[in-house]
Image (cartoon, rainbow, N blue to C red; front, side, top):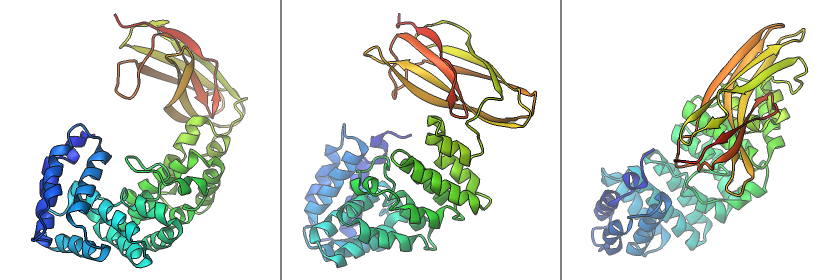
Length: 370
């Protein structure tokens, strides 16, 4: 993934300044010109906020005037696209909320839909959702029928509970199911781009409302099209890693492992030098009289700084074993340092998870760096 300064940087500020100048040639745009020098060291959303605030400072009129300038820039400036759209749409949403009228709110929602194809308005729409969720969702529901796939995706992506890089909308989390009708309208969308957003939205909901997500996925599975199974699998991925029985059941996996015999996991070493890997190996055999459909994952029990443990689940494979059939699984798990996880020396462990049921953990020692 590109670094923040590769997405919103001084060049973005210059492009935005040029675009706005074509629509408002008499505006001095002093704040925008200076904003490009104040982005160093900031996270991506902070950079967008700096340009948003500069744009609001340079165009101090009411919402109607502001929106007119943006639409003029859209129609006349070739550079009015890409990452500069984030601060532009964010500024429009901020201006509409400050205006306080339903007319400004509705027009800002329309502007989100008009500009989302030039980057995405998924981040800016959060300001409007926070201000009046029900009014916004009424408009979003209409977007699900749009001929424009970017607008349909905005309906799903912009209303996610835990949209990355965005501000939270607490009411989305506090009101279970408020966006399910949006997902119902889009889970069979002809665009994979839209369906992927639906699956990610469903996965977001699973963090707080597992039973709602399982019920929704089960409904979809009863009236599927050619793509429904993949949408459901991706939307239930976190629940499957948690071993949620309902989610596993929707996907055809039984929590009853009585017919399964597991040899392992066995590890290739009991002491793992920092930065190296441990390999796990296991054999799983169906000793029952019927086919066994298995979702096979493994869990790493990481040592924490305080001496406790935290777990992370990793996908291995799925398999359907006939009576008497077995499958071998192998995986090398690296402890090479990465930016998203810090490894602490001491006792760790690995266990298998089959259809949501974990085996006894096999321990090993992660050695300190030399």
